[in-house]
Length: 130
Image (cartoon, rainbow, N blue to C red; front, side, top):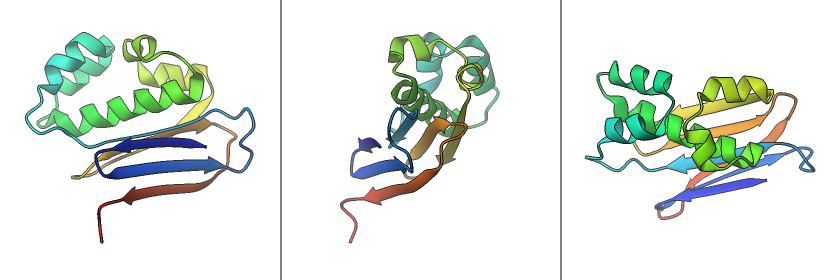
């Protein structure tokens, strides 16, 4: 099982075989007005920063990449400092991991799991909604 929260959002993932199976989930509510390119320049792999610079609105992609990196940390037990500077696709491939990423207006969400893991349940809940 992996759990994440951001503001009023809660994300939970459960695998069919939870013992020693890489699984990580992360959700982030975007902070409006944040200079995501500056953060990416100092934190992300150069290839990822270059790709963000080409985006007309880099915020969605930034938060999707950020949640992917946080989920990778949870799935691999690597530190965030190590994962931030590495190219995400290379990390996924070298660790035989798969990912799902969803950007929306309200949040960015990523799930990382072993390529053979069957995720039995994913819950995204706004705990303050009616």
